[in-house]
Length: 499
Image 1 (spheres, rainbow, N blue to C red):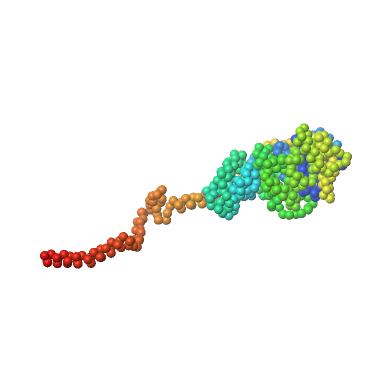
Image 2: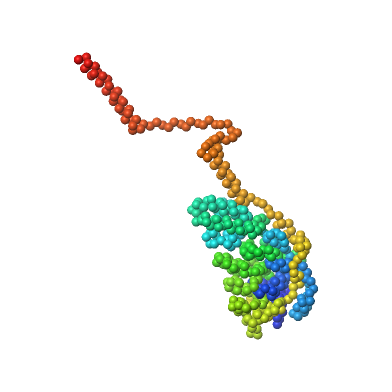
């Protein structure tokens, strides 16, 4: 590799990827078995040798071989001789192995709070209304200072939202109990898919993806994704979260001599399939602006039409392997791929895409002024590292010797939303069950608390007496009779005496 550039292969001339323009992003496309993984591998080797850390997903399980010295094979040496690679030697690249499930590498974790409602909605396949309820739940957690770490925190928070739905509707907006129930069901699905392994602490420190070894070579971070691909939604959401995390945390650096990190997004079509408009806008924004943070993003996919035009237009460096055109849709893809290149008057690009053999590609890379080079039919250089997977013993040794060994292996427990809400409900229950007068309530009855002396209930103060209308009339009648009776008796007696 010459200074400031990575040798990719040979066409009518040697094709180089300029490090100063490597953060203008790129695309590697082609049908299965045409050599996309090898193209990714030689670029990762080149970046590592230039002191640029790399992150990539090992979808098929063989990319981790980049950490081992290649084995002499005739077809590799023939390719090197054919393209004029005179100093071809075998060698390994420093690598760190990662695995969301913690089985084939160091665990990678994120907190529920860091994931955010938008990406969680994508992961849980929520509709717009359900996403709104989830957003309200996150706002409630922020207002009440409830740390959201893992799935049990989110489950406890959703239960709190369900209990206070009427109150929250007045404060934050409509909270439908139907939507709450849907979110709870999707949480169960996540747990069944073992997604709970991803949420927790210690959360990944993105600086650990940007390490260099003692020789100044960048580490190649390899994510074991063969098992992860059984849950494509988790795979794509995780990589988008990681890309967003880099975008949010890294400082602006502008144009620099070489990237601070290069991010390879394999099976990129999973990111865009059925993605809602808000998510597509977020992907476009991150892809457009993250280059100013010194990060280059390379999407790897089978069909170039998998990448939306708003994103594809930002991918300046392109390596197009062979495509097949047996159906109208495939023919359209070939034509679209041909039209994305800067035309070469000496090459029928559309025809060449159909004729490319394994290890060949149409290559167009950014030149010094930032313009794409004329597309050329290119033989890709052979890799220096191993083509193939690691053995279990090799993987185990690599994990043990890792610069982050022991940092993420054990999950930590901290007081979070689950514990706080549990304590709050326990306190509320105790307060309503026991009064301050020494009595306990059992339904409608009050009995003394056990172990306490029975208090003497205080007689309530007598209410002030007041005369009703009836009692006032009676009293008046009695007073009148009291005055009249003596006169009546006197008259009676006089009458008797006179007779």
